[in-house]
Length: 402
Image (tube, rainbow, N blue to C red; front, top):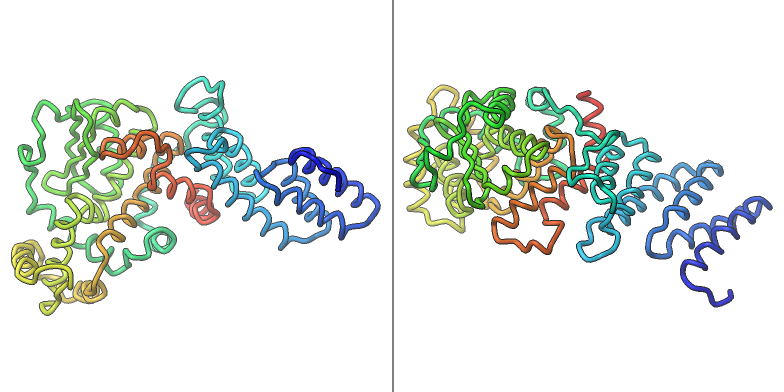
């Protein structure tokens, strides 16, 4: 082949493949169209031509594999913090792939990201016509009544958070919360930061009621502060000024995510520092399995915590809950549990707000508050959320609930 620039070579192969297809030389047509697509960076024209060719030749398996590969490549470019693909071009490609795969939700989320990152975007929220947030009202109630759907979420995103652990936390969340009083001074909170009646408090309350949580105090700190979801009597949501200032769908994301954590009891895995959370879980398991000792935790401290928690565990039904505790009675990885619980809650938050750019914005601001680099656009939590937002698994769940 003549020496051509990469883009010229790609265009040449596409045109050559089209001509070979017309002359019924399907084998050579497939080779040239495939090479045009395989050449980096991902090119939408090459993708469309190869997908069309595979559909015409009735190679459904090949077409499905192509579209899955295309999503992986384009998502890698879209989430590359230093690459040019992190703009709207890769997201437009992802929308095109979602359309060809028949993924309604992925199509919507990719369109939202493309609109938000477009150079001429009218606003940072990307809520222009055609890309408006989906209506997530009633989502939490439906999810909590659908254990099979919830299991699918955890299998995909948080296999470390077993069904037994989830059942244990959910069953005990009300009683454990009753014995945790909100320590304003210990959490660095003041009465002036408590939100009274108003849109934010009403938003948080509405999601909390869907999740079966009676009352959630809401605090907004004037200074940058990590977002905290604190189970207790009452439970509390604490957000820093930068997160609250995002407004709009970002607040729906935070509210829905927080309500889910409180309603399922998984907030207990995240409300304290990792070491404290590990000691809490070890003590809780020891209440049901007296011989349990986590290899990374001191036995004396575990026993002390178990004795403190024992007062919060109702005697009625304790025998039934023991089976769930036994399932957790191993050398659990607290980091994996926390990461998994946060990932699932973020997906619930996304469905609650229905707007991927707003969910990502909240996660990025929260990471910056925790000391992450502002130069890294796609923090780990946001990458995980964006990847799952475009998946067939989430689309299937949404179809079942819609």
